[in-house]
Length: 497
Image (cartoon, rainbow, N blue to C red; front, side):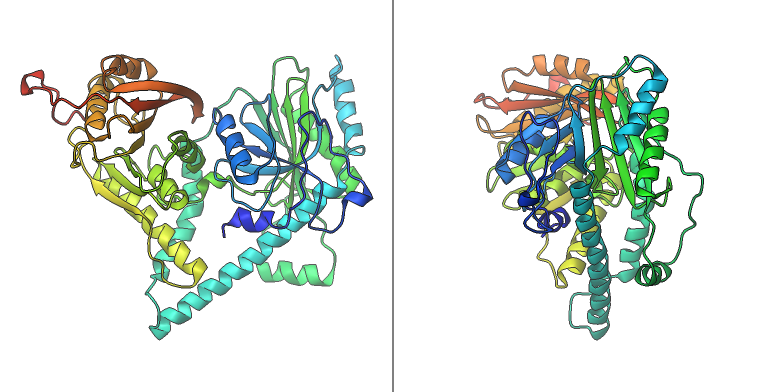
């Protein structure tokens, strides 16, 4: 059972109405702590809002609303683990058509007055349930690690290198900063966080736990304002400052930017205002990758690309330019009845992908407390222009093509893209084969695809935001046309990297 699935087991009764502007709860609606009428919001990779909404409807059987603010959806939580969402937050109240005043001081005064009028009670109950779950999960994690150490010392189970495990977890924190550097969506909006005057110093867990037992702890919080739109007479920093000050006065909490317990969200998009409480401390797209490369793809974006090709049982799914293996690893964890192949021409990339696969298996062994049978995935080094695969042996190809910025170059793409499409058409099964390809170099790809229309047919294009770049995900279908080997005079074969 995955982490979010366990957490959502405790949030059973969530209700969402398509035209709902606020959440209204009566005492008769609350039958227990685990049955709360609340609205859950989620951030998703920009461009994949519809894909995430489809996943919610498919797995949860619930209605889902796509926000006018790109990259956000609102849905019904049930007992399941969603893999297309980045962050989860519980909605305190939603204003579809908030009337901003013309004078800045009056707008900020309205934000101050708003804090005391919001229905905080049930969203905070959800936050408490989620927080208690995370504490229990952390305790279970320590117990499982200790049990694994004992089993290794006794020689009764599969040996797990604890040094590598420790290195993995410590490097994960460092790699988070690396991922932020490469995958920070530079959307045209302001993001500001309320900064407290007093920053609490870090304390040992033992001190914190003993303090909680002896005396009630004052919660620390911060307010994060995400604002998009050009008609506002105030800045995100001003909104976060004044609204956060009112929240502090209302709850008597302590403001702390870094070591906070509660993160209050103030999302403003034109005239849409949504106040929420964050349920996730860090983005869920970091769930599988521990060894990052220069262009590591977000797991949520990889999942969205895989959903576009609609994998069927026993499909062979190949990522011929896998990098760190984000796409095939995501596929192997979700579509376990398919076989996934991760390949790249760079030995460092293949090594990172193999390490990510090994790290995922190690985590699974620690969590399960027993040896794992492995994942339906393999990693191999190869040349994209000469794949060591039989003609027509692959059902699906999903890959992130070089943008020509951090990897490769725009000039090389003019030769690389046609060669890639030709080799992909050879290994992909005619008629039933599919390909989902991500690239920011759309001009080059469109030109390459125009010369391959006899073997590839474009059925859809999804525009996404990747690290601040506007990129396209192309969904292709393999035509019935049989592959014909080009003559050697064409000079198409060979490595073009």
